[in-house]
Image 1 (cartoon, rainbow, N blue to C red):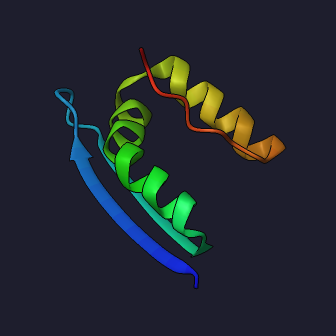
Image 2 (image 1 turned 90 degrees about the vertical axis):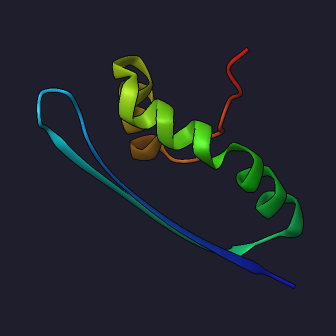
Image 3 (image 1 turned 180 degrees about the horizontal axis):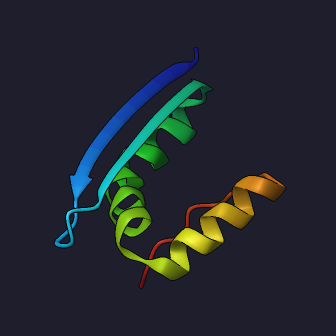
Length: 72
């Protein structure tokens, strides 16, 4: 069995800059779905608030095979 997960977030920062993040994921395994469900909010938050994480995310998406790390 495979799963699908879609998510969208729209945000405006204090300077008035607007951001949109839309994710469409399909053919997820049960394990991938559980992992994404636990970490999706953290991923979205860090994507919008951390310049360092945005740079890493951009690099990983360009190179492929991104692993979501838990901040500790």
